Length: 409
Ligand code: LRH
Ligand code: MN
Ligand code: MN
Image 1: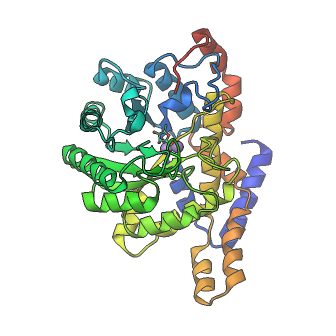
Image 2: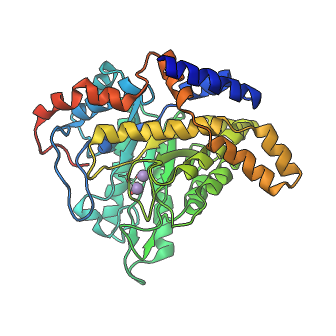
Image 3: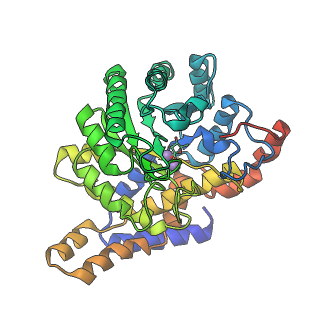
């Protein structure tokens, strides 16, 4: 480290010791934070108005793994990559698994795609047409089979099913078809696999969405059994929703399975996580780290086994730097949340000290964690500034030979 950062870290260490923070514990937690990146985040993507094609975008799933490996090499925090089928369809999944391993990665969640086929225009598992429902469930089962081949232990489900007009679909019948599809899929899981059920309150259906909120995911998961849990995509909530409250509720019920992190300004913008709402991200981590300290072992285990995943599609920004920025933003907010003095906060809460409690929490958010992050990266032999290291690495120039016209999503 430079003299400047050595001095900054020494001061930081002293300040945190004075606050009663155990920095060895903080560092250990930071080192263990792994965040899965999405294969589709490396491809070309856009809005519903236009997909802009970029130079150097991966042309196949293998090249997506190459780019993800570069993100992992620089951050040390992204060893798993989620795949989306059929976006990442290959003829030999064992070969894809071996390739991932050869570049230092593993395959994370498998995401079935039930929204891009013409047959699914009016729904997949909730389509009024029984043969389309069958086709959709068969795809879910195919994905469970792919999980077995690639060694994945998470099936990540999002249903685009919904309607645009009142009366277009029979809501209760659709609810039952959805549950039937989930049950058949659940029965195919191996004991070490989890089913993560994502919700989204609108889009592409604008009148109703079959799995519209966390309560519907929760209820479906509850009926299925212990291997089914809720997936919180931070972009999938209405404006003003208290996402961290949902997180704490699901933790307490032992049903928080994972996150799809991204930003949310107005809707599901799929932009860089923490770019416009860093305090929300910090408050989410506060709930999680508080649950790490819960006396109930089930709550603790749920908090410790959360699948942290990014779900982003960058329309205008270069893909790899956007992913690195997201990882760094998550690490920053996680580090700040690790500096919360829980004993002090508890004491203020128990004394009904409204402003004292708010201050105890916000104090951690306001600490500059740059010296801590630099020290942890240095101790791990990682570049202190992963973004700068990427820009200086020449990787972007090397992949330019792929040309334009890579994979979309
Ligand atoms: C839907 C969603 C879901 C999909 C992904 C591409 O908005 O969040 O997770 O699989 O985007
Ligand atoms: Mn998502
Ligand atoms: Mn989304």
